[in-house]
Image (cartoon, rainbow, N blue to C red):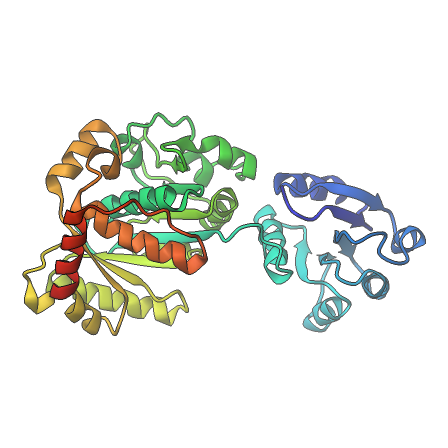
Length: 396
């Protein structure tokens, strides 16, 4: 539920019902409605109580701008979402902003634009209910094992943090998560990304399949082989809705390097590059990290999958140097454990809780949890695990 009830002002037909419907799709409750600003101020010439409301108003003239400024002065601290109707030049938009609007949406509006504005209001006014983080996990080349890392990382975040975690995949082809985790989804990313009807918080929540005490999965398509034709702008909209459903959203992102790939990365708070322990993979990681920096996207963390501790020429410290000081997480190989987990349709930690791969991914998950402010519920380590950790630190 959106933390602010809405007060609608000056939203006459034909905009009244579309605005109410779009607000409901974003879990916003309309508390009351006024035909004009005069009606609003006749009832509330000052805040009626300590509770803040979201003021949603249509602005179509300079008089509306002046009336908005009056209301903003009388109701300080109330976020204002202005629905701007008609042609409006840059000067006009500045006037609407100066009148008190926190966010502006052009009429006729796209629902994803309205949803993004509503989400941004929560950020501006410090009202976001959780510390939700989107973590995009992507390989830099074929065979890096990014899907295994994404599944393991999501499982550890859910188990250690004891907070809701969603694992999803943004492949446009056949999904893998349903098969790996023995799931039977009714709705997949195929419907949410390409259907004409935009997904809502309710439809996204209904598509999630439970895969553990705190872990849910939104899998890629399972009953079709033809590629998904995602609606433009649908990927960031879906990520925003998933963010509302969990404290962590882990995205298994195939390395397509196309506009949609970078669009998905732009919606992430953390980017995890999965590399092999060889020169071509490190070169690809350097190139991708530079591309992220050029686009103003988050500096990535690096997971070296199937890490060999005896490979001194490319140990974790050296890889960190080659990648200009990026945080590097070595993750040990566990081919036997991953095969057993796939055969059982379960995460690796459920099949082989003492796997060295699980221990290494636990370290990465612990860092993410602590940085956001969650206290990880770490299992008590055995003597063997403490000895292994000591050897790992000594060997770099």
